[in-house]
Length: 333
Ligand SMILES: [Zn+2]
Image (tube, rainbow, N blue to C red):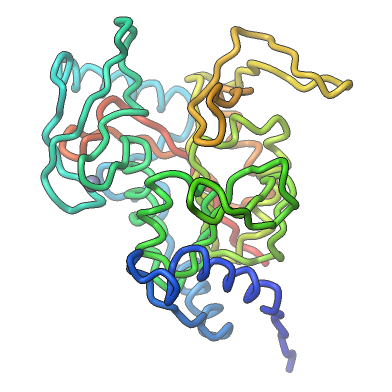
């Protein structure tokens, strides 16, 4: 007979930071109650059950679909683009169902003043929860394929966003972070009237197998060594754990490299620099990549035993224009 000893000591310390940060008894207006961690053996059984009963890529629930390769993905996108042609072309709002609020709302459409096309991933904010298209879609997908519970340990790679506010209400064991180069790894810093934990996604301070899920939304394109980040996500996931990832996508097999960090540590631009909005810097944050389908193969070589793309579009849910997300699962210890 063999005995498995699991050490939850460092994790418990991390999670107590999370409780203090996200509310609990110290911050009742956030609505979070202090929540005791599950007993490790109960968690192992639950994770084993979830692993055995996981939603397979071929049977994703509506509005999500699996695209096995770039040809299937492009076909889905060209069909859906014409489906939605004309919808919300000029309107300021779109009426639809917010998955997060479970209510019919008028999603707000932000149109650039210079006449540029609408960036559909970054708009259609719900007036109640504040979540834009890609966040609502990814949290919907997370529920659909991970079936998370309040006892799950979840790591979110952002703190200064409405998506953090939303998840913190639902998951007492949520841990979130931002990248604060001036702070020590794992250190919590008071900024923007909140406590923010500093983590470099290429060198996370969490112990192995700390989380049931890692959620990383539009962060990897800002990480020059994103493969190292994938390795870290794999390491910190428990067996049966899942990574849900969204990134800007190039609609081709190859990843488009926009910029590199050269041997001297300087940034070399290979294309017109592209900066994304960043709550921590007025000038924005540089995007190094527009990812292609090759990201899937890289997930496989990282160690993830199951990995697939999910595409979706739905006027009903306010997911205008088709979108893509990546899912990777750790099935082994
Ligand atoms: Zn909402």
